[in-house]
Each structure stands twice: as C-alpha cells, then as structure tokens.
Image: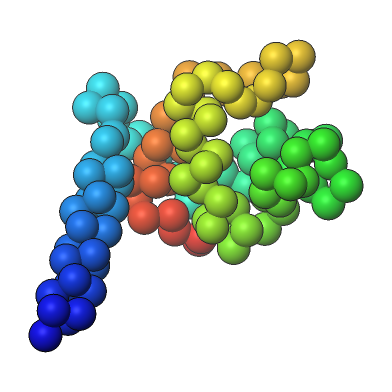
Length: 116
C-alpha cells in the first residue's frame, strides 16, 4: 500500500511539473498567424540555424542532440527550447534566430509539435 502511494505521488508530481513547464508560453505571441508544423516551417528553420554545422552527426554539438529529423527534434525540443529562450543558442557567431523564428518555435510547441 505504501509503495502504491509513493508511486502515485511521484506520477502526480511529474504530471504537475510537466503541465507547469508546458504552459510557460509567452502571452505576447499570437500563434494564429503561424502554421507551425515541422514540415511547413520548422524543418527549414532548424536546418538553417541548428543543423548546418552543430546539431548533426559529426557536428560540434552532436553530443547535445542531433536535429536532422522530426523524431530527433521532437525528443530534443525541451533542451533546445531552454537554450533558445535563454538566448544561449544559436551560439555567438552562428546565424541567429529572428524574433519571428523564435515565435514559430513557441507556436510549434504550443500546437503539440505537429509534423505535417
């Protein structure tokens, strides 16, 4: 009984934590103007700003995630978004994300990471 209670408590804590993290969207971003899907716009942004030399097999940031496919980007989104929203990525000297591209990232997250 005690093990069940501990297990359920951990599950509930995880769910609460996930819901708090996933609801931290910027109220100033209007996602109605974006069709943020991986295929429609995110793939081009990710390839241009993340994959070119860093987040690719053999790239300097390979250990921090490879972003060359929808599945790999979706599974690495939280880490990538943390770095992007803190303006730590893309690294200085690399092509930087525009405000519109950052909004597209946020809208993609808010939409649940649709692929198509």
